[in-house]
Image 1 (tube, rainbow, N blue to C red):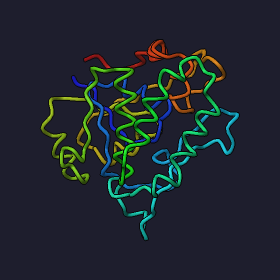
Image 2: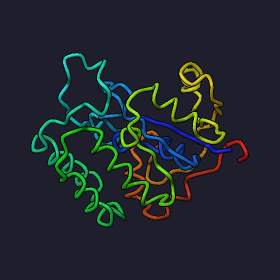
Image 3: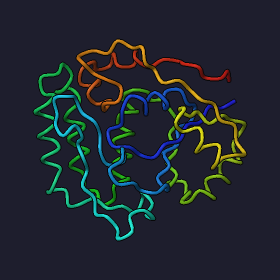
Image 4: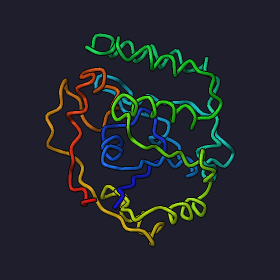
Length: 227
């Protein structure tokens, strides 16, 4: 049985985002879902020494942002924030062992000419997935013309038998929205020994700058159901 996981596109997501991706056979980025202000879609937690703790992407908010899907949210002009983001990351992590190895690739993504938020987020996710799990199958709902929950549910119905992998705080939502499909609650890793003061709620980018290719050793096969 396939293991599926789905998530909104997050900005430089934390360890748990990529742990769920690691456990899945197919990882779905659902950019048709509604945008939420001050969420992981536009901000990421950095190391404790960074205040105000979050690095945030500025976006152009629709008049009624609560009803706007992620894929319709636009970025503010890049000259207003890209330079500051890169300066912040350099200031915090330039002395980390693998900073110089990965930062040029990250910088190249930042300097691309994006209009929409979801394109920037998806490119960042794909870059990190290529580094970590290059064989992983990623599905972007907007690229499959799945632009609402109804079309997404129909698409799911054409797949072979699968479980949705969910964290405990997501179980209620999945039971409500996807009642016709099986879900399986997975554990969050809490007993790792993290290097350099890293915590799994912080952006995985921090761990990547610390550990480089060896980062994959932190991902674990937790209580996933047998295939």
